[in-house]
Image 1 (cartoon, one colour):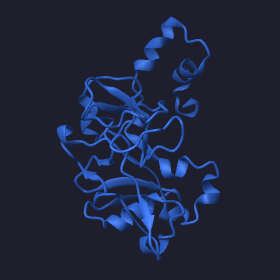
Image 2 (cartoon, rainbow, N blue to C red):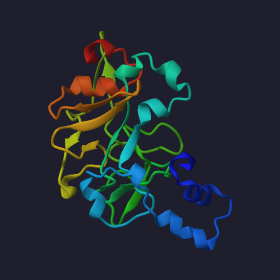
Image 3 (cartoon, one colour):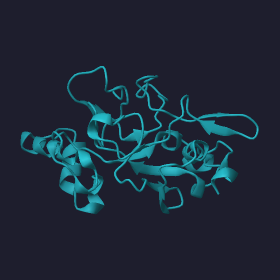
Image 4 (spheres, rainbow, N blue to C red):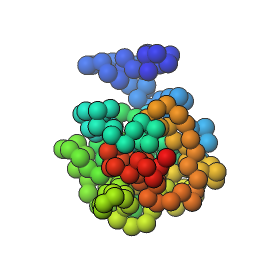
Length: 210
């Protein structure tokens, strides 16, 4: 943020004591982190919403690049998500994922800007149905799928949005940033095993994604 002309907001958020006059910054939106095609843009204003989410299967690992044995070009780092999805909104500075399950709650819940977040430490304790859908890798050669046959939602309506899945903002497919810095759009009918192989950094399914 300091390198994208948001230094004032950054300092307000991360200072030890936030002066009252700076509290308004917490309600601001930062356009850099909002997808202009996100259809939930017009929904209720919330603090620091984010349309882009990080792959929890990769970024939850302390070793990061050393563990990316499938190759950077075969591993999805970031993708898109409606910033408001059901009763959940994705906050760029939230570190918890307990509130993904949007069907059983009233009001709006904040959650971390991640996907495939299965609950991997004390701050991410969610389990099904509150956790995201995430890849389960089995077999030899290994194949990754979810517990039920799903990939991502292709431009769902706001009332059909599922916060446990990625949501594309265009009918053309899902915008993705791979680990090698390349950007691609995944087709809505992408094979389930190929999609989830892109989520795992060391699942051993890399040959199928080439």
